[in-house]
Amino acid sequence: MESSLVKENPLLLPLNQEKTIYDGFITVQERDFRMRIHLPPDHQLKQAKHCHFIILPFKDVFSLSFDSSQRLQHSADLVSFILELKTVLEVALKSHPECRSMPPPQYYSQLISEMEALGWDKLLFIDTEFRTLRLKADDSSGRQHVLTVQLKSKHPAEPPECSADLPIPLAITWTPQSTLEQLHSQFLLVLESLADFWAVLDEIDRETWILEPEKPSRADTMRRIAIGNNVSIKVEVDPRHPKMLPECCLLGAEHVVTPLRSKLNANMHSWNPDSSVLHNLRDVLEIEFPSPATHEKSSFSVECGICYSYRLEAAIPDQVCNDPRCGQPFHQACLYEWLRALPSSRQSFSIVFGECPYCSKPITVKMAAQKS
Image (cartoon, rainbow, N blue to C red; front, side):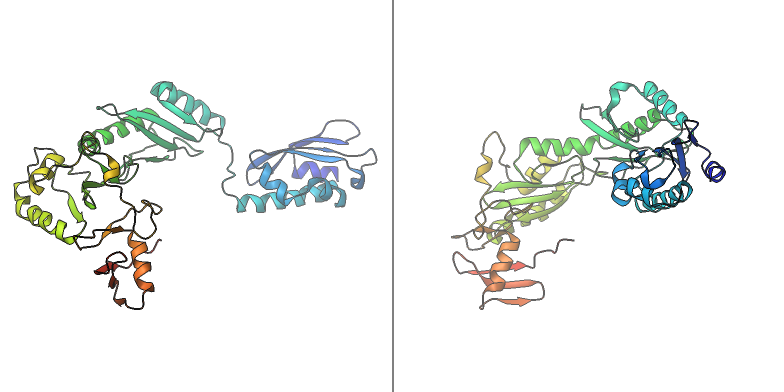
């Protein structure tokens, strides 16, 4: 038995002459697992006290699928026990790809060398496995950005996975000779290419009341700007051409939106790319946007007339009764469900026709978009 045990597991060795204590490693899928086994003097596995494993970070997963002490006591001999143990470990490893093998020692020395060249002050976070890094980067306007880097075990031979809060895909060039410092420099160039885009949105955020998104991220390209009570404009800014006329959608009651839409169509030819987007919007719409300096946001945060809340998950009221004497706002989903339940309502394709819950005047709503 002993010759077979040593042949199959050359790194698992007895620690005493009686050969009742074994300590060392077993190898499964090119990964070494530390283990220690205590046997009774008569070597009978039924009396074996315990079998201890040091297999982090795989411990929790393994313990669910293998009761080592019980399996040890029911095995015919130590060789068959270790064979069964290896089989269970192999199946568990295949079922949990997140349990990766440890990188070689040169991986860590390479990582430390690259971080010293980049500067430790750039490191915001590193996980316990030294695989996930978050690096900070400041653009020329002082905005702080975070680059998340997922290193592979064969770094730098394999390209890392990179992500950041950007409105465009992050394209990084990587070769086996690349370093984190070069990666960080490429990220800074991407940030500078988006400086005008963020400047446009920063001005809009600063000078107007933003209804959506509630908490804009650096990746968001859309802003819904308050114009008045139950009237707003949704603008979609192109990250690559931020000063050009954005895609615009006016929201509100038709008797209010129609004149604004006419002005937009009549004046869009006068759009000046050398001026700010906000200044251009003021000119083409011939309006002044309410600002935090002159208005309270509560003036534009009118609750839905059906559910009596402002936010329904991420949505805010964007359907308005067209009767000037009513003008009650509703969430699209609320109004759709309300009208669909009324016997007097009718539906044509995705549009439901019915009566306003408040004034009974005609009102329509498109079918609420299904969540993916």
